[in-house]
Amino acid sequence: MKTYFRLAIITLFFGLISSTVSAQGLSLKDRSVIELSMGLWGGSKVSNTIGVSGIKSTADASSFIGSVLYSYGLREEMAVTLSAGVLGASASADVGILGTQEQAGTVIPVLLGVRYYVPYPDQDARVRPFVSLGVGPYIGLESSSSIGMIMVQESRTEAVFGGRLGIGVDLYTGYSFKFVANAGYNAMTNFSTPISARNNFDGGDFSIGVGWAF
Image 1 (cartoon, rainbow, N blue to C red):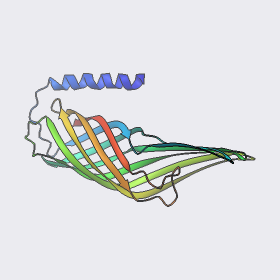
Image 2 (image 1 turned 120 degrees about the vertical axis):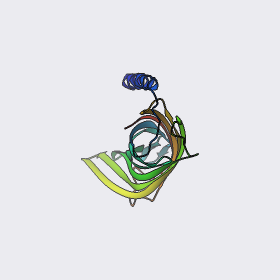
Image 3 (image 1 turned 90 degrees about the vertical axis):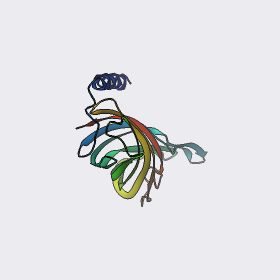
Image 4 (image 1 turned 180 degrees about the vertical axis):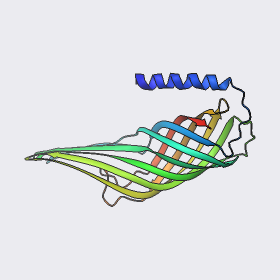
């Protein structure tokens, strides 16, 4: 937590510095932007089951997510984007008379998309609402271990197709630096074999971040 707090202070410091710089016009056409975001993923579920064979616990908790995004302004109101991040996490544990089994999984979306600013922004507009759409592979990673008469560890990877529809707003404090808030919904096809007992990780997300245009 201390690391995140220090990062937030440093980010705010540079944001305040950049806000004192002349805007020089905020045209984003033919400019690139690197954006870093972190936040929460929804669709959570926590359950505990006690049966004859033992105890089963499952946690699909709303979890920390992070992403990095690159965008290029084709026009003042439209940019193409490429993003990669970590979406959600899941864990489960079975404790029975024959031993213990644990599983953990996560999903990594790699999305190519478009971001469209509405209404059409003036070149000196510092607040820029947008809608976004991205499609691409959602890569599921899972590891499992079981402890009984012998110990077994396994891992696997599977990719499925999906997409994300989102809305958000950019707040530019200077010619290059910005803050961004973003909310959206992820939908994907089912994994052929569940990742930590889930066939998919559909659900909403919310994140805040910073960006640098150059």
